[in-house]
Length: 377
Image 1: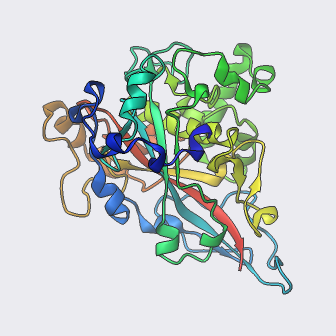
Image 2: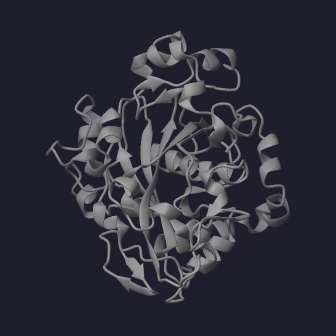
């Protein structure tokens, strides 16, 4: 995305060292998820890396039941140099995504990434808010979030055989992108000008319903259809325009929507989302694609509740003890039944997000983005 070239090092040092440098960025308005950054394996299911496809044959199955994408490599052999070899494909923990209400907040680092920038651009960097409507992804400006994404180093740390084919982009942010402007609903359309010719309100409801079903069931027969409808994000709403505005009073759906939209924003602004890593064409390295292949990604909620189950690895009950309402929501047996480790993009939150609504502010969410990577060895 436009912010892809912006690293933490480019932010004024005083802003990084002093999270409270701006009145609009007081610590109490930002969530703290530094333990997630320090110990990411505690907040994801490691078996979500399965299945592992070796020479076109899948081995193993993940708890989340999400298999290899429909167009994962099919040839048992590959060649990227002088000698032929064999390809391996698997899900890798690719990026950690922060969908934050307050611009500049970074729960994973506990820092204010750009307090000076926040003050200077206060009109285009509004505080996040939830809507009073239930039209997910609709046109009214009922909610707004900024997104920061951090490349996960777990594939390299774990020595995954496909790590060499992972696109590298250490940090991306929507903070300085004019295409992620809450006060300008027109400019973001310039990233995907073709979608206005494809999408019409007349048949939009039918497409949205079909996309919701496809994304939730996520079978190999339905994946090509869902991938072709790239302007839809299943049950969450529309992927376009690719900005932080949404109309949904549910923070789980709203944060999921903008987290997925950031992938599309990244794809057209030269970021991590630009690259395809699925299929025989990508076994020698990531290749540019016109839009992200949704079936090549899946998400896991890491914060404020992990999608691993009703308890985290330290045995702490996953509800906010500060809020009685949150306790009631999280002491819901359905939260355990529907904890699935990971979910496909656009999949109904009734299937994976039950009991994961933080009732107190700030309602910042952190997700792990899993990417399927095919890589010739």
